[in-house]
Image (tube, rainbow, N blue to C red; front, top):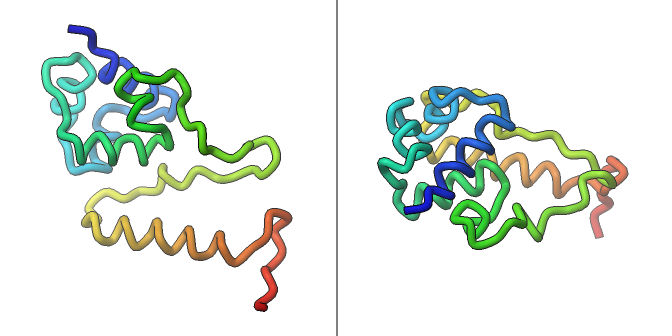
Length: 122
């Protein structure tokens, strides 16, 4: 059985300079669980796959090897530089708190135009 999911998870984790332990903490998973996913000895459930895809800003299809395009919907980062906030220390936070942080970041981003100025209320 081909282990494209495990290979892609490892590739993305390494690209983001995360150890298995650091990556696992974001999902309340042990290093050994991440190791099993990467080696193909175990597979994450569908909800976890969605969370991994969101974390790395890739599609599920990319993770599963159905596409080599990481995110066809991603904005051109050369035009509008964005800061990756997925590296924030979320250890010990419940999923609800992490979701609230992500929602707040999106809320703040909506307040500004692409050139960094505050949007005017209409």
